[in-house]
Image (cartoon, rainbow, N blue to C red; front, side, top):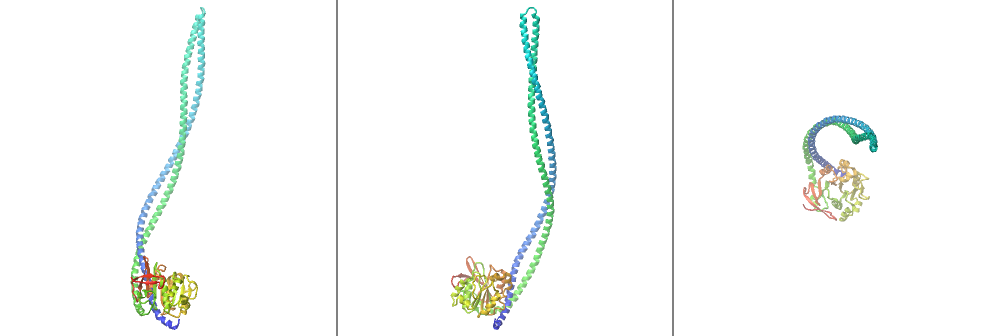
Length: 530
């Protein structure tokens, strides 16, 4: 930069300090508005937290009481389980005694059955003896009959013989009757014996069945005893755990009370912060008034300054003739809106008017679109680069290497600006891209740099245009550039229609929304009516 250029840049540098301060103030105000919103949200959450904490204290206290009741109940149930276990053990012992008694009864029954079997054998032997007596009686009767017959045949001595025969016959008949009575008695005894044996066998079967049932009962009692013992152990563990839980719940209740107290303290702190924020807002308003007053002369000068033709139908009229020469402008675009055609047309128009352009392309502005824009002028894109009329800063790696195309992945923005100023021989339109700066150096470095790369490099003849994507650039950083700008244009898309508005400017029509139409050929963009 020569001496004359530096002299021309000095007044602008002082003016830029005020403008940058205004931009910084806008950042603070934007951040303050964000803080106000966050404080309101925090305030609401703190109130809710205080209410929730109070509710939790009540609920935990109730829970603690319930847990203590459960602990007492668990202790009682544990004692009952222990008693049930003892009773189950006693039942098992009684069942064991019953089983042993049944074993004794079974043994006695078996002995009785054996004796009855022996009695049956004796009865059978008596029956056999009676059968012999029957045979003897029969034979005696036969002998008596024979004797009677012989007596009838005999002579005088036959009478005595006949008497003897009658007596023998009578004795045989009586023996027969006695034998018959004994046989009847033995039959009754045999029947009774058989009945006794049957009853004993049935009793033995019943005893066996009872013993099996007692054995099953013992097994069930064993299972019950084991289960009751396990239950008792489990309930004892539950009782211990509930005791511990009761202690824990009391500690939690105490902590919740502490949280509630802190929540109320946070509410008090927030009230103090809100009071300080009210004071800060008033102070920011005063600073804004001071800066606005200090900036009034600069804006008055800008209103009389020459303008830079934009080459976009309708946009020059909206901006009062174009961008202010030597000023700083901002174009902000929202989601769905496109500025590639506008930047291409602006670049070609500015170069054709005899100025130079330092262009940081958007991620989607390619060489083809820019080349088409130059076809409508008397200078091609290749010639503009070769003649030091155009300097392209490639921040997204979308351009090929050639003369005056700078890959910012391999060199710094400051070094490129120095090279641009050294090569150009005409005033510059510097088209910056804040998204690209963030992509290249990072958000924090972009915040720290702001207009730093331009300070002392470009002079009062140069015009700066910063392009900001609202979807990629944080609001506070965008607010700085917009606040420090002399002219701010915003464009966005709604329901498939793109609109544009001049938000701030010392000249032109601000606050009026205009429709934007696009074409595939230059001038690419037209700004229409409302």
